[in-house]
Length: 152
Image (cartoon, rainbow, N blue to C red):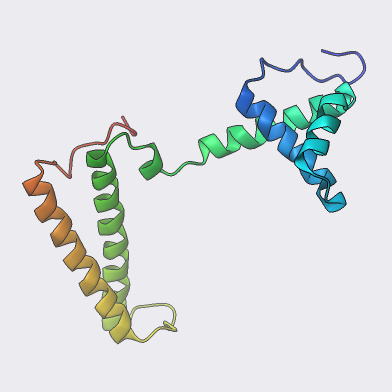
């Protein structure tokens, strides 16, 4: 740890992190409306503590962004993305179907703002889309129930 800052040393910095740090640095100067060349020059000559602060912030931002990718973005191929899409669609349709059933039973604990007819039509379209996905999966030999490689 550095004696001045008590922060751990920075890990090796790649070009992506360096570019993100420079952009974060530039955002602080954006109100001045300087050209990117001037901002780049100031970045290169900035005191080490400013550069390290921006680099640490860039590492945090990039790490959070990498971890926040949805399952569909992590899926490796179109078959995996199709499986994820089908699972998400059927889960949402199931929740909507359950809400409509509770409404019909009179056991729903709120009054929907949207007309029930519109919600019912939405469910019909979702079910129709699920049928299309199953048909396409059959043609393309995709097992929709198989676990995708992103979640294995």
